[in-house]
Image 1 (cartoon, rainbow, N blue to C red):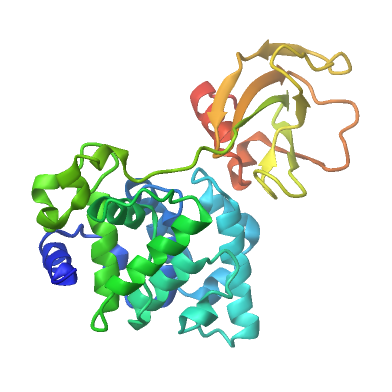
Image 2: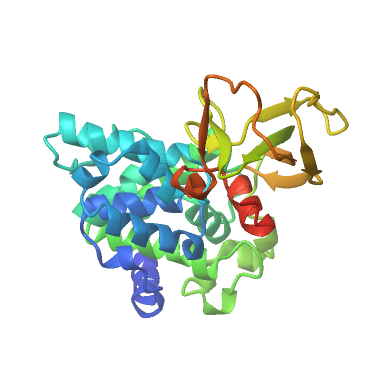
Amino acid sequence: MSNFTLLIVDWYRLNKRNLPWRSESNPYFIWLSEIILQQTRVDQGMAYYLTFTKNYPTVLDLANAKEQDVLNDWQGLGYYSRARNLHFSAKYIQNELNGVFPTTYTEILKLKGVGKYTAAAISSFAFNEKRAVVDGNVYRFLSRVFDLDTPIDSSAGIKEFQKLADTLIPEINPGEHNQAMMEMGASVCTPKNPKCNACPVNEKCLSLAKNTINNRPVKKGKTKTTDRYFHFLIFKSEENTIIEQRIGKGIWQNMFQFPLIETLNINDKPDLTSFKNKTFESTPIKHILSHQRIYATFHHFDSLPDQAAQKRLTIKQSDIQEYPLPRIIDRYLEEQDVF
């Protein structure tokens, strides 16, 4: 498509949002921004980016940080494996790469938690390597401009869109081209009510001409969502409470929570007869994750159990925020003024 890059890059230069990582050529800061913005809106991720660049101004600072501190700074952002992968990869850069951030797509791809899109973004933004990025915004933009009905969540679709993106990226300033493509999808070619009149390539857009904008992109189907039923036990005695660390794989790995009993359905009641001085039971609180719906009930007790399990910690109530907590617990503490 002739003049495609010229049109979107000219638009980008005039209309791009002022985001702090856009003025960066530091691959470490770009990496941070890309990992934070996975599954996260820009307005939500901005504060986390600023926190991480302040608290960990170099990749070595991140490598030398405690995982608990990293998880604490990530608290509320969700998808906590991203934070653990950041920390793991920072240590890899420190120990295996002599503290030097990798400079090529191939080497960047070796970092844990970095896929083809993220590696292409970092290598093109920081090192101007000719690698086309294809994220959700780019999928949507390309599917509409070229009126493509191949499902973007199919293996055929992934290959087709990547090939198309590869044919469009220029030799000169590929990083700016990638930024422009992503910004088009984020600001103009939005999921709902796209601003077609403001689009610099609207005259070339096949979906606009065919009136198929609302049918693009095409997806095969949604991943099944699982319902889970959690019962958190909040024990209080004078200044103390009890927490435990989640271990093993799964949601909230290595984070802390109140002692937990999980039941099979919402009508099942856990056996709490061994615990004394129960004072309150909340109504179930719904918390939505990517593929899970959590229904959490909080049970309050005005005493500590006679014998705490080995994995549990007795801490001061005032120290609870020193531990990384899942957002559902953190929000409950805020809203209910528990301690």
